[in-house]
Image (cartoon, rainbow, N blue to C red; front, side, top):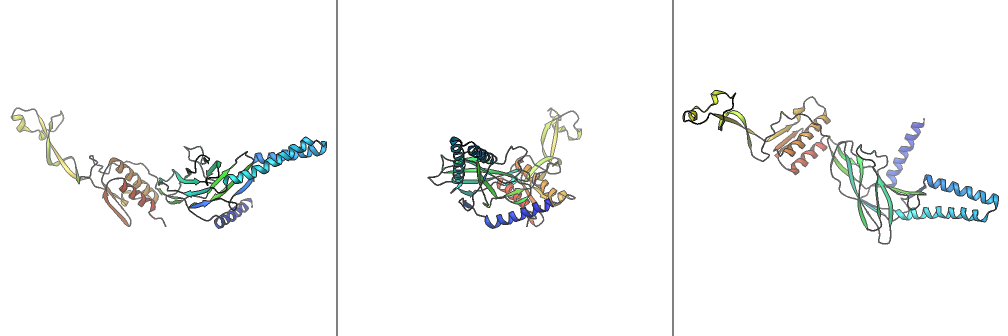
Length: 329
């Protein structure tokens, strides 16, 4: 019963938020979207002022009345200053870098103020966002006192591959005394692309090459074409000894033969037969990262798309984005 009631309240809240917090690239806070509630310290402060007022009535102490009225005045002023600290604050979205699944996505948000206003002790986060194991908090802290604009990063975990829409952003303040909490929720249309989570595995079946260039072929030890001579090492086959050189009085040398192979590697969907969709994408993602790091020329074939062999950061980004968007609606 309690769970169904909580679920119904959450649905109604989300419906209300979707109606009253439209998605925009820039939002200026005002009295229509700023909310104020007492903090725990604020409630204790109100309770204490009430006790002082009751004691003043019982004992008819003028100073106690003055103290009670002073405490109430301070609380009212705290409400006013908490509201003013957020009022007319402008938030706008900035570009966000792509991340891998399971990493923290850093969404850039710019805060700006009018010349006559100051905004201090601001906290910005995504409500109910879990912190990454390597991070201590998902809340970013800043203020706009000495500068007119500031750009902050707000973090949340990207737990699903594909286009990731950030949740609604919350900005709050407890300025100046911590008695009230003024807050607002905005939707800045923050989004980024999430690549598949790379899964390491042995890549021995791939010809990785050695030159790291853009040549069309590489050489490896073989038996087809004569490549050169090298010094004899005990254990080498006597069939490969250059006996003509020995007959001329030179040291024993071994003939080297090589095979020429194409170093343009192809990553294919069927290389990982038997794995499910996400497992295939994760392994292809790992291949793209490793081959790009080694400077290899490689291409990729996935159902419905083929990317010819190339090299460089742009090629790497294009393949990773194709893997991130594969199968997405």
